[in-house]
Length: 69
Image (tube, rainbow, N blue to C red; front, side, top):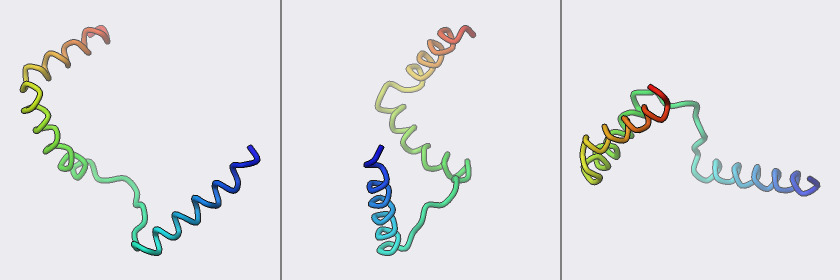
């Protein structure tokens, strides 16, 4: 426990240095539509690479059975 305060100070200093160098800060949450637009290309690629909609439906069905639905 005694070592946590110095680590916190170091992290805070690094964060300040990063913000000073790049001028950006963490913002709040993304809008759901923006998050969806970011995820859709990757999701499409994964569907194509790993066997199409049949695999997705099979996995969803398996999860549904495990959940008891």
